[in-house]
Length: 356
Image 1 (spheres, rainbow, N blue to C red):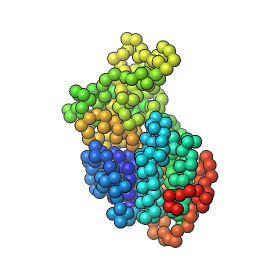
Image 2: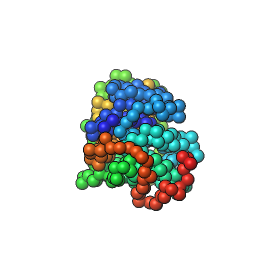
Image 3: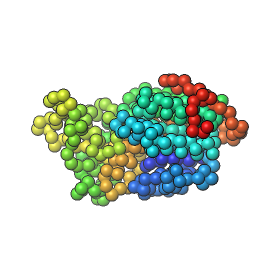
Image 4: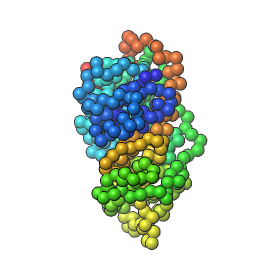
């Protein structure tokens, strides 16, 4: 099946779908600091670097599926929480605009758990209603990537729509029996190097991207323990190097007051941030997925914003199985779909819609 990728970033979703046997023929990513990385890792995929707002629907190729993670900062608990009132939150509707025109057999959208907060409830119901009014049976839910082969706690909302003509609904793949751990990075422990002056990229690395950001730790960072042992999943890999977890070679941080931690006395030299490559391992990128950047902060950003590859692959395998034999299905006429999810019911005929 031919898939188009939007808000592609460094290609976590795309790599997972490729591993599952899909062809990612065309991608869209606006951030120019990511272009070299994407083109290096997906040389056969056509990359459109314009903002999705500037792309006309007749410039988008025909496809079987569309995948993407519209920017999540405005929905994030750590962000502005402005949701649909933020220009970035409104990009969800641009994604819907393209789906309306192309009518792929399926789509997938990924976002942070904050989109389920009560303050975003009406906006999220509107988004789901729009998808169903375009003719899709829509399923959504909150999943933890750690349950699907990823060595970190990472909760994300997954929305999948199948054309109503398929008469199918997406349900998540079976969870893994075993919980992965930080053992995924143990072999890299002794080869990490610090970034060079002003946290610029080090071009003389034995292992690509195996460098860590240097500099002090903020009071916010020091308010919580940031170390987990090898036997546990990592904290969520974030899009900023300043808040990268501490490598598990160090002991847990010690509480000395309310919202105040210190490094274990005499062990300070063991506390370093995870490298970009270690974060990529935790995000289940293969080691041959190379991140190209001039500033190490951009490496952390690309890795932290990505969908974990193994998580994406398992979702893709399930979608492929659900839609087996349906690639030639008649896509018309439009049939309003249903919505299934754990939190609330949505009546697409009653919900407000930007399509009205």
